Length: 358
Image (cartoon, rainbow, N blue to C red):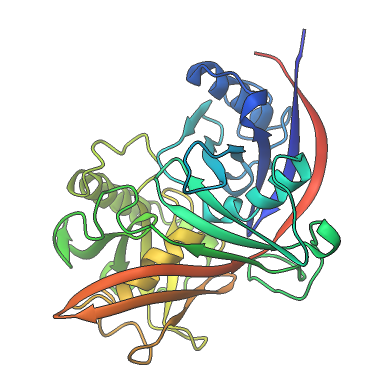
């Protein structure tokens, strides 16, 4: 006998995944996770091909958003993110996802749990995994979600209607503080790194310190097993230093290699998430990397190129660039991050019922 669960399939930013209403899933965490793994992979035992499920065989297409009316007065919607670990029969819930966040308000409107206004609709979304609130603005002429438009984000073919995401409380979202090790730079296994958390825990390192240009293709980096082993060794130590404990079975912190910009941005990146090279860069990872650029004595010194007092930071990645708008102030070498804004897009791909067996 198969179980039936209502769902919608959205592309959110440069990721895609399944969206569920919280009320349609089991309250028991372990049982809920079994449902979600089965929906994505078609089995709870793990299948990297995901041949019997709705996933796309990639971490970027094995994502899940669980949405409900908010349980706190400061927000309108609650958003819980689940990352299915491809082929492992496991999930990770320690981090959130800024790309999938772009689909939360459209999903809530399409599901009837949030009323649209015209010509735009805004909602404050409580990010349950890490805490913090993001104010999201969606185009809704005639009280309907508009998906077509002229906004272009790298990593996605074509254009769509813009979705504005203003992150209000992201500093130390997972680790508790912006610099969880207490240092601007740490030396781990002989490599200098800045460990930072402005919405996503990220370890930032110079590509040149690994004998790389920083402009290598994804394929080149994926096939470089010694490099991946070294980065993972650094990640395990960094996880402990960042108050995350044993991260060997977790997908955070993300690992980022940086190089001077070549496309007019502030710097060039290659992101490991954490064991696969990202085709672009995650939303909150980009926010954390951009934030490092304004910190005195961080690893980005002499690598990042940007105008003093600038608010816009174009972070280059393999598919193009990602622009982050940071509202901040600096006093006595201390940086106060007020908000972090990005533009995303989303598209409803399908909706219906997913059939699972567990």
